[in-house]
Image (cartoon, rainbow, N blue to C red; front, side, top):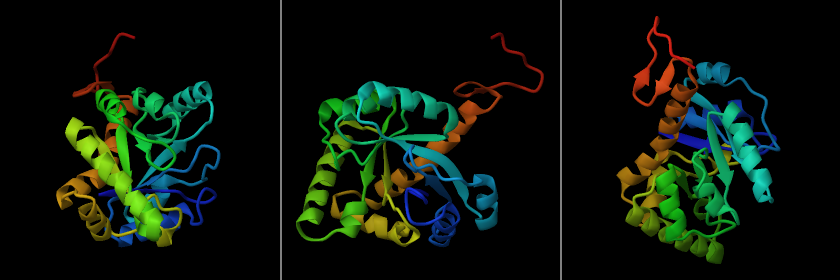
Length: 232
């Protein structure tokens, strides 16, 4: 299972500190999902080797303008292994863009309906279940967060859309062990295996995109042999 978190300067903890905590909690990997205007400087391979965890270079794109958002998605797609987009008023645009891996916390600053979820399924965009607000708020705000997640679960389940799960941590103290996220998932109607699948999906995204970026990639399921040449 993998988690995805914001590191300094987008969050409070360094990538190394997040990786150490995630490894101690039993995660196999950590996706660094800093917003594009707050990138972290780090060596994922060195940190991963030090703490025994797969550190994945990701980004969470955000922009107020639709055309600027589309341009940022394209530029980050060339450089990042995992491309998330900050949910909000452009949720539909994001769900219709196959270059996007994850629509991040779509219910926080926007809404989701059956049209968006079907578009996400058709374009392979994972919808994120952000458990952070449930874990870090109380009272009416927590109730509202639970209501939004239950609505999202019903839509994702009905239309069989792909999804990921995260606590969306901004420091190492906000990271939660898988067992805690499993408990939150049960409170919104998920079974434990569904939450595990949502955590594992981050790793599947990283593996797929690394393969696509490799020199040996031709098409899904086909890799170039040592002596094979491909017309370009």
